[in-house]
Length: 320
Image 1 (cartoon, rainbow, N blue to C red):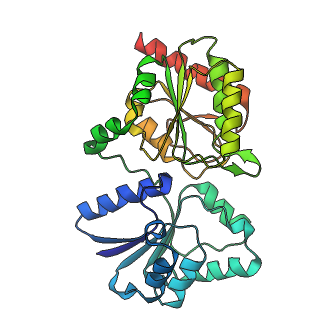
Image 2: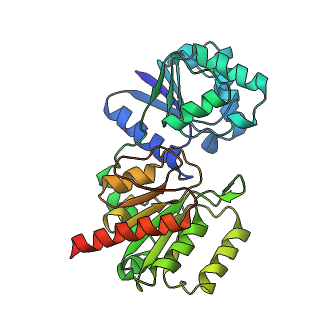
Image 3: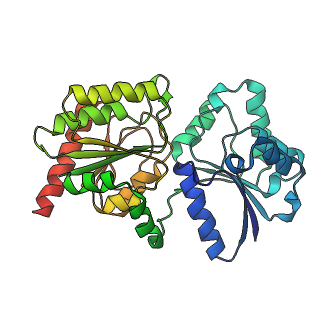
């Protein structure tokens, strides 16, 4: 088939962009011809021009991976809805729409080829906000195993101080975020909870090290406040930020624990990657997690600490 993917490729690095990178590669390996329309690379006006005047009729399948109402409506107006698949990775904008916007989106879904939802929670979210599902609606996992032939290049892209931190951390704990963001006034990726976790676990593990992969800073004032907190509780040698757009999956082969204390989530590809590589993963209960994930009650610090301590104790006992 000839396929058009509408969505981002890295950079920036995030769950959707990483998925699309691997999805595109998998489709091409199956013999499909794949084009990609990425607003982050084209710019707004070229992106809109391609949507409005490009040769959409040449494609057997148009697969949409962006949080936008305009894109589905343009595809509907151009008569391409019946060849369009929408994959919703974690859409939280519906709650901000008025009744007419929700009806317009529902009209598109009634005519689209397929709606793919990442998790049962998103299905409930649609229903709670009065958006009718498409006739063909599926719930799927977005996880695609990372390509092994990229591991060495990714590992070598890490700064030397990251390599040094990984070597001396015992145990090594990982966490990540595409950028510092707040959801309903709460630190979305739980950076604050990671700081408290290290301060708590350092009592039993003096050499513990938490490497937090942060693709973009986002809220610089908040990061400064977090760093002050790190210094105040005496864990500046136990906490390290790796900034920049780098995939982190090679680190799962070296870590003893991965944590995902998000207060909202769609799926969490990094959780699936950790489990895939045999690294224990502790994640909040805000969505359906990959089988094998250790789940804790959202924003419950005591439960978070307990689950992480248990996971590390099991991992250390197995290592002995």
